[in-house]
Image (cartoon, rainbow, N blue to C red; front, side, top):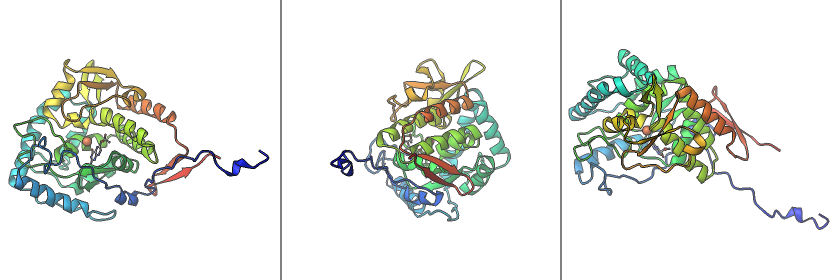
Length: 330
Ligand code: HBI
Ligand code: FE
């Protein structure tokens, strides 16, 4: 106009939250949230157990010092910890035959055959990373607790999975709540996620959710975390007319795996735009699960959803440099 009011912006462009541009910047994505801490939360099976809490502290301190480019360290596990691992693996294996999706069973068999995962000892991260790098380029990286959804999702954009290394003591799935784990534990990460991250479509789906999360609003982060929750953690698919688990949260939990595939809970078709708005239960079994035709189909639907995702810029991911570049439309 004549008075030049356009010099004075009537509205500000919304600030885009900081996000990592290169895989090394994941060092800054390590904000932990305090939820289900055994020191303060009586819902944690380790609540009030001094030895357990000290061990958890010790391992988390090691993980907190981890930086991009560092060599992965081996952890000395106790015989009691190896014993817990052995028991859970044993019990899950029989269930997986009936209730895990074919991708999971195929990849788990491969991991066992190659000696990357072992039934009688807790495996170390180094050989798992070598395996995953070969399959999909996913990398496991230790972190020291439950991260904010923003930080956790941001690392997925670079095919980095921040894993929580603790909870393999006898308190794991302990008699109070034997088949439910309130925080991610090593068994969940290695037995639940690793065989699935070895699948190209699931790896891509995880990375896509991560890429959508970069610079997203808090509300969008909430939606993406929910989609991640219902598909990567608790997703089901249909194989030969049967419900089978693709979600790591189910594949690593004896009780909930059976519950999810039974006719007790509700089952709905996976539609990302609807799934994203669904409230979920993180303190007990889900009353509702989403079902996809398969991983490839879930990926296709996610990409359709991504196309409608509002953001003031686009991102290009460069796998050679493991970095993202911002492209702003003018
Ligand atoms: N942090 N370390 C870690 N591991 C997770 O699986 C994890 C997390 N923070 C948030 C989170 N998962 C969930 O909110 C996802 O739905 C994003
Ligand atoms: Fe998980």
